[in-house]
Length: 486
Image (cartoon, rainbow, N blue to C red):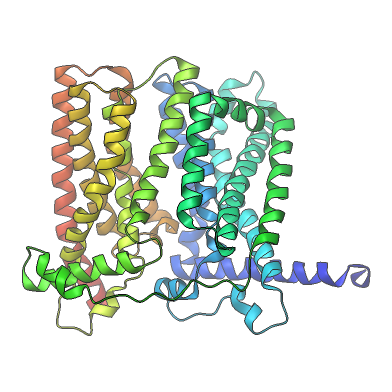
């Protein structure tokens, strides 16, 4: 039987099994096997709780399903970068290790073919680990919409297939962009093309037609999306240049000048300057946090438009975007610590608490313009009232600091890794929900906000901002004890 299978197919299947095993062992080792096993269940429970909560506040089932599709699309866009992660980044994140993806340099394997198998593995692996629990989490909502619960398994399966097709489409779009970069297309050209295309779809209303065709079009739409993704993915792998490497760059010594420009204590000044230079010299530089926030803004704006079209209700723009854009604090802090480890500082005469204080200062310096620019664009575009805009600005500042404090207290220097820890991820999600859910409800129910609601929300922003500041202060001693005892 084995002899009837072509050699190339056997090689691909062997690679696929090896990559699956490597992915599982890596996650289990990083996040503790049992805790990692509980992660899909945690995702399902959180999605179910969010769906039931939104449903009881009057949000339609169509709007909830649409929001989940948008979230999955964003996750697919992010996941498409995984196969192109450089070895330097992986070593900074995980330490000294050798992954199967880099074996094309030592084994007679095509880099392009290995990358294709790797992306298939990522699609299937995360489609089962993330997307399937999301579909299962909506089962209570789907059951309420069905006349007979006997059809519920089929409804969940159909939802998962639709979500999975959109997740793969997001991956393929990112892979295509990166493949074009390897052929010399400048990044700014791709960014301008993506922004222009998105703006054209939005202003002409074509995004609604595309959504109706691919996502709301049932089985035929899902099949069309799947075929289109496969065709575009195959073309992207054909375009991808396996020999591409980033050009070498010469960096001037900017540390001394930057350190002198920071009005801080001498010890903290050097640590903050190092953090800022690490971010500025990495691929994408200071644009990365802003791009992440703009992507979040675009997805939320699309969801507002779709929900408004379905329900006829549009939220107060300032309150809504102020609350949601604060979540970018997590991604900003992740960029600031992505190439950093606490162990690297233990060889120097600086305390762990000082390092965490410096990270907080760097976070404020980077995050303030990162969220202010998209927020200003959102309130102007959606025509927020002055009162609504001021309340949203207070929420944005306070909630950003709160989300940052919660993240650094729970995760230390590893915000990306703790997402797979079921216990800490649940704690983080509950901490976010306690703040964000009531704010979004208020943003939808009272439009424009009354003086009483505006005052209450401003107090909420200030109080939770103070809580975040206290958490960030306690994070230093907490993690210093953890590293000393560990």
